[in-house]
Length: 382
Image (cartoon, rainbow, N blue to C red; front, top):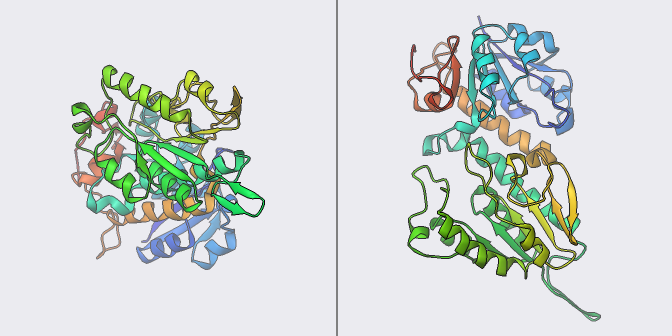
């Protein structure tokens, strides 16, 4: 008997992405799944029902979730959605687990095996499943597009008979996946770009994209990358020195894009109100960390606010602003991960709780929370 897989329409009005694509449905069919896509699931990501049907999916309703072996979502299911799932079902989504332990416990109580895509380890084998990278890449691109929309001047230098338009100066704070894409996009649009990061390895990456690197390069800076490749929090002394350098630099910029996040922690404050006050009127600051408390003092989630003549952009769900592209990449992340749980011979689910990818991402299994970061002791049956 073939496995049933369900892709719902996201219940949040702020989530236009969908956890499937034409290509992912075809791949899921080849893995042996009967795929049901809820009517209208892809409408806001430019994927009409008929395209899913052509790929081999059946268009269904929310009631189909109740018989599904696997459910693929963008966001963590609500309590109402969980009530419609059967015990033993696998649910894979961006779970936003930090600070939401109660919701995770609810999935355990419902008997779900829940996986958080954003906990995927950053190892070679999992690169094609790295949802943080795929979505942050697009967020970095969109941040520059949003900044240019709010900035009432041209970005590239233009030499005309009527005079010269100077190139915009763009400063990117944080050179992870989002930051590097923001640098590349701003460079493509002709801006003069500089960037900063607390990780020494970022200096070379920034330079390779043609941007200038700005940082206090002392001994602490040289030792500042964690084993997982993430930035770690710096000492108060370093933060003071770096803030002074950055404040001086920011005052000369036209556009600032902040991208700094620390997993499981509030976003670090990078731009103070005093720094905003020092910027030229008409400057633009885009805060990509606004959902985690924000890098910019005064940024408001879901709003574009003007503070002392500077526009501070705090759009929520920035990858969702380009939902068609974001959904295609996310659907590929999901299907590549799910493929590791399916036996090629029998086309049956073969979940190995000792697999490093499963261990890193499994939140709940067998009626319990299993992830050690959320009160579980990972491991158990295979």
